[in-house]
Length: 338
Image (cartoon, rainbow, N blue to C red; front, side, top):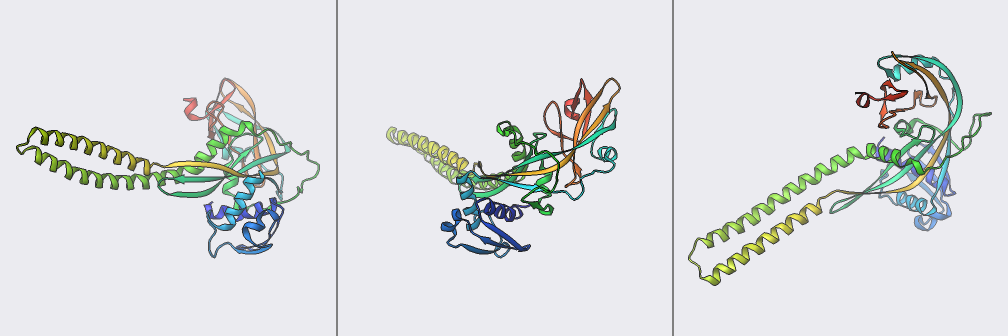
């Protein structure tokens, strides 16, 4: 999901959260009844927005206005994901395609339907060198498993959200405290930002290498000139001035080299600008896991909206895993199991 694809649902959800009304007559148009919090910055009570001409960017006036208003209001929005079919079918077979226990085998024990909540954070990332570039990144953490849930972000364009739940008779899940989510959020952000950070660092390293070669040529020529003077007969005063000149030249070169490194050093600043709580029903699937020496009952979660199991986490490192081993009543990823 590209940064531009993130912006249309972000703007629509943000305007609704701030008290406005959003109509989406087609895939590229947003009709906005602008809320009070945005009227001064946008200068209108009604706005028709073509999201493709020009394309939305983080620097677009509408994007900046919504992000600023949400961050000031400390807004938390809610949405509901209502799957058409709640049952998962042959969940034992689907589990076997999603996960692998080695050595050992797994058997289906039971399933139950419950409500879960995904916390979808929108972060504004500022990439700072000698310039400033800003991008918007969504990250999701499931509040039942407390681990990142990238799949819901990847599938965002094909999901349909409602303002009310359409699943009756299911107790509402209370929103837990979010204080303990920091490790999961950091892991999700690292995954989302890694490719862009790597690309920007390579670009800055290229610029830095070019600038250091220019400095080497410039100061190399000056040092060669000083070396030529040293080979001539010099008075004590001239020799002293030459030594001082060489020292000043070395200090200046070191300062310029240090300044160039700082100029092209990539720094990343992050700020959470909005939080969307996505409620939905899913299936808690209990599997019996058997190895040669022990057996364990373990819960996994089938998402009927995404038609896939939610990620499982290693009991040692917390990393996402699809293959694992059973050791001392813990599920371990291949690295920790080794």
